[in-house]
Image (cartoon, rainbow, N blue to C red):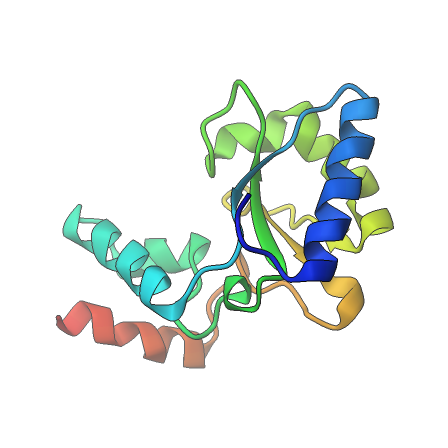
Length: 145
């Protein structure tokens, strides 16, 4: 299993079990990410020619990702490509949107965002929101290198 904060791991297991009981399979794609790993994700996308503005629509700049806390998860479901817009039309997305809050998770509804965050413990969701000025400034480092 991906690394998660203990309470988030417990809540994830409970939520996954409840979804399965309802006939929906959710898969954990990503949990904790170090700042270095987040940096590497962005650099790989830049090396493939993806513009930084497009990257920041779906990835937080290093140091700004909730994944650094171990309280955020990226999810997928069988039959959809992980972290793709396909997921938004899946039964898993609908289930998470309707039931995730019972387990302390919220599911953003932006078409390019599939991060659920354990918000009941005071963390807000950061992935998927339009990048703030600070977020963009932190990411400019990648455009220069």
